[in-house]
Amino acid sequence: MDLSRRQVLGSSVAAIGAAIVRSEPVEAQATPPANEPFRYCLNTSTIRGNNLDFVGVITAASKAGFRSIEPWLTEIDAYTKAGGTLSDLRKRIADLGLTVENVIAFTSIQTDDEAQRATAMERMKTEMDKVAQIGSPRIASVPGNARAAVVPLDNIAKYYNAALALGETMGVKPLLELWGTNPQLGPLAHGLYVVAACGRPDASLLLDVFHLYKSGSPFAGLKQVNGASLHVMHINDYPQVADSSTLTDADRIYPGDGVAPYRQILRDLRDSGFRGALSLELFNRTYWQKSADENLKTAMEKIRATVRAALA
Image (tube, rainbow, N blue to C red; front, side):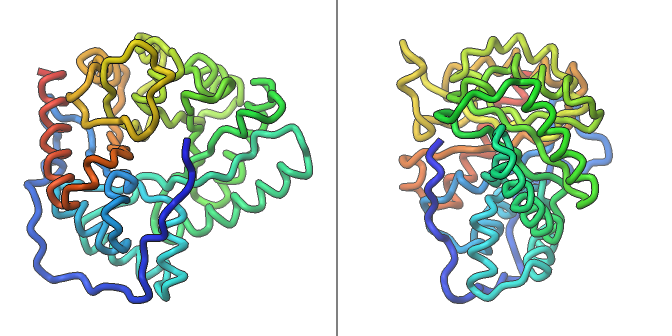
């Protein structure tokens, strides 16, 4: 995954208008409809290319009808560097009717080098503190460098156990993220082994439709996931190609516009007990040629249409 970022905040923090036009919130009902049992979340990478400041990003998310967000830690840091405070950011998010599902961070503790792992744990502790201050109950725990020495899955389980123990003291749960191009924490089978072997009932995967496809994991494997312990699922789609290795993050497209078997995916998630957030994560530069409002309006329409058709 390309981890480079554009800093999205300028030197000033824009004021939020009092009147914001929103799509009808699905989650406003006490009992979600049977054909839309999930929360709809925006991973903020989806409109990164519009170069909005962070207040602009969350305003656009709320206006499009998303009820939660999944920001990147780099955006939060940029907000505070521009003069904002974490408590102010938490209030701005809440005032827009949003919650934070999870925060994307890139500190990996998956290394057998004890010194490096200790440093990473301290960094993760600092990141968890920031995440807690903006009201997020979760943070991503990512794979290590795919080019580094292979870490046995049993060791990964032990290190993830330690991250969960740390998170319990901080009030923030680390989600074990799988990346399709990572040989150890790419395949769904490996992720399932790690969360089972770590020995903690609060263990949870952070899955992604595109990454599952890239890893070669059969989508039927989702039947083995305990949906009740899955909090966030990244949704996106991909075009038909002869070789999945040719696809990059920039090739992700709106759900329903590609060949991902969403009827199978969403039914298996629902039937396994998943009632968490479907978080739209895209990096499509073509979509960035639209305004953020147009991009997210289209995205929300396609997400809801895909979910309704799958669960009809």
